[in-house]
Image 1 (spheres, protein in one colour):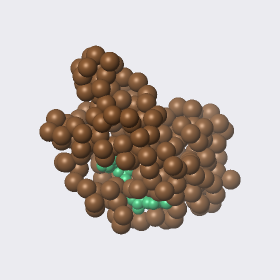
Image 2 (image 1 turned 120 degrees about the vertical axis):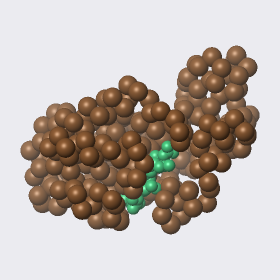
Image 3 (image 1 turned 180 degrees about the vertical axis):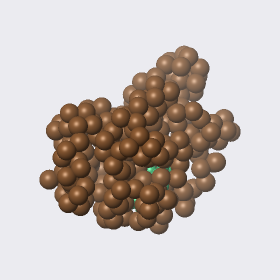
Length: 236
Ligand code: OAD
């Protein structure tokens, strides 16, 4: 921890990649591991373009339920510590796989959401995109004014990541002197590949996770524990 704090204090350019684990202490379910969403549900039934084409109502019911869970939560000390780091650090980029919006609510100003945002909706007909915070949504599946179905503004399995967001995330990973990997199982690509990219470009990589991940042996420092406890210590 002491070494990691020094690296962070000395770095002029820092980037972080977060995953579901950072929101776990807020009460948002993770995907893998005990109590994870993918233990209860099959991604191919709910988080693919094919699932949406087959049964848009079912897919929307699942997202509407998740939106309700998220709306009842608050950002935790881990989210707040990253917002504080952004304020302090000369150059800081936050890349998240999370769609819950808790980094925004914690005060992070620039968040690269590589898997989209559960509070955004996009028209499958005219392509219009916007934000809808209503919980629950009044009609499922929701429709655009043009009459076509709206879809959640998230990235499903088999889809491309938003190109410009991804380009900026890759750039941040390449330029970072310190790269933080927080609360992610680091098994979903291309997002997890940012760790390789940062490492290859010479960053000190610091992992914060409750458990070991495929990267734990490769990173410069692996801190085992809760993000909500370790992040405030790291930036103290
Ligand atoms: P996972 O659910 O796969 O992994 C969560 C990670 O957080 C695990 O490694 C846990 O050990 C760790 N963890 C849990 N609680 C923690 C805590 N309090 N502090 C620190 N670590 C904790 O979530 P992701 O890696 O984010 O994609 O999953 C990546 C992607 O897979 C998601 O964005 C989603 C999913 O399918 C799409 O839907 C496209």
